Length: 126
Image 1 (cartoon, one colour):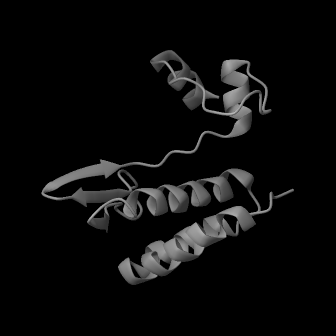
Image 2 (spheres, rainbow, N blue to C red; image 1 turned 90 degrees about the vertical axis):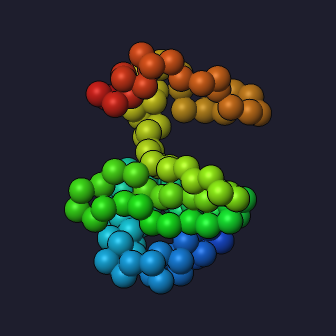
């Protein structure tokens, strides 16, 4: 069962409009992920939109950097004369729980500390 995406609607709408102007094929691919019946695909599409929305609102420029059909870096952002690249990766709740042993429940307000390289490798193989 899909979760309600109402919370993310502003980011999803803004990103969809921007992506359509950047690259129609990329927009169609992203829309397919967002409307997929597979939760990991939906979560991936939402993650891309939310990160793009958050970071682009704090930058001077943004460019779609992903090579369609190949993948790789998602966005290039610019601030003043500096550019940086962003790859958005979604780790499913199930993979995170399996790798870390931490349950999928809110234990406190805030974020977990940064994952170690070992945890990152465990998430990738789960």
